[in-house]
Length: 249
Ligand SMILES: Nc1nc2c(ncn2[C@@H]2O[C@H](COP(=O)(O)OP(=O)(O)OP(=O)(O)O)[C@@H](O)[C@H]2O)c(=O)[nH]1
Ligand SMILES: [Mg+2]
Image (tube, rainbow, N blue to C red; front, top):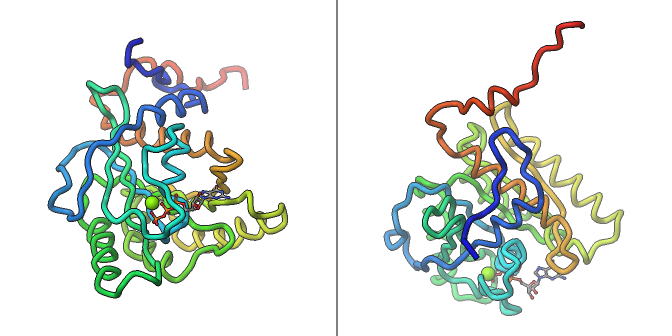
């Protein structure tokens, strides 16, 4: 076995298979309780954020097709640190996933709650390498005030396209078709207010239990990372793949 990862050649569409082979490479890098302890990095970082118990750790495990990569739990507030995972070839990593502490869990004491929420707010504001945010929202609850506050933190950079945004309506296995459509519609409507010509904002239903939405999410994240690569020069193969103007029309 080599640790080579099949990749789309420039200009070729990223398939589910290629994207899932990439997410499968996720491995634990480090954990930090304070921002200053996070390693400085040039790699594009994708943060998984959301209310406690929304399914962040489970989504990371499902995307990585690994049972215990991120620590998922029935006990809300389980993830109390920022956990970083590295992706791509071992000798040439190309992205990081960050599993962030959940917010909004009522039972933790006030000072602990404020500390976590501050860590997260600071992270979103300060982390230079942040290139994408995956916001997990329990599909039965929809966007709550705390989710909207979080979106406020990043709205300016989402508007410019500096940060990409994907909202996962998690645990969609718990909804019937009609409820799922309503959840999707309400979230799409809210996100419409954040979208601009330059932004990359999307929402999708997701179920770790039924494995639905997994391929689509992997493709979206892979495309973020590929788009983030600063090209030295446009490769000839891309120019050749560009649609030619048809002469006879
Ligand atoms: N039915 C169903 N349950 C899910 C799904 N995803 C997660 N869960 C359950 O929801 C609970 C919370 O999941 P976690 O992934 O630990 O949530 P988290 O957002 O990481 O929570 P914190 O670390 O506390 O912030 C667990 O009991 C999961 O098994 C899903 O797609 N369907
Ligand atoms: Mg967690």
